[in-house]
Length: 339
Image (cartoon, rainbow, N blue to C red; front, side):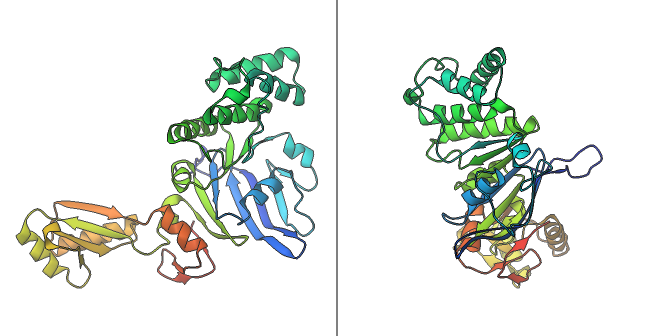
């Protein structure tokens, strides 16, 4: 999902920015100087193992906890987080890891309660409630106790409650944890609709497929620091192992290609596969160069496919202490940012 641009081709203004975000609990440093810039109207995904500090970042940016002294400059929707937290609260919505739904009352009553908390008039509260219940396909269950809802229905109600205040920025802290695949895909559709309407989404997730599907940019948090940041494709190119596979149907063409490419190509196990692998980072520039070179060598394959590491590989490499290599081929043990 490419980052959206305005009509002039420039990147949108930052919905969230942080410079040198730090947080300690006593002697334990939880966040160690995090820099963020999240353009308005995009999805930003923060990945990291348990205990990396993801929820702490969300809690600070959503004013649930204070970053404390020396926490750096933090702005949300243009408001200084430290100087004007009330202005920040007026423009954001938060859906945490644990549902805020009250199971003892109905879905409709949960919605109306949120409308009261946002100081909506009775008429406006009922109108907003009806619109959101319909939008999230909860009309038939609106009069039933929320305790009777399935996990996916409760999560939809949770997000609907978050939207009562019409927030411009929404924090979703692991919103699909515990949901079945169908409910998870439904939630992805809801998130895409929110962003299409101009909302900025700050997402934390344990599901790497989710970040790959939804996020314009992804940051990997490890030991309280951003280990790497970029688009999903850029992050995948940080990890060695990418290659182009050439597949042949004619054994003679395969043998000829293997002889011509003996210095760069790797034969796949078993000649019956009739395929060769050439190391590649998968970038457009390198692929173009490779195609030109294959043409000059007279190699004509029946099929060419590009294989790059997935986000699982990225996650384990960046959070497991392994060295990574940036897209220029230089080893980078401290992390990298791809622009």
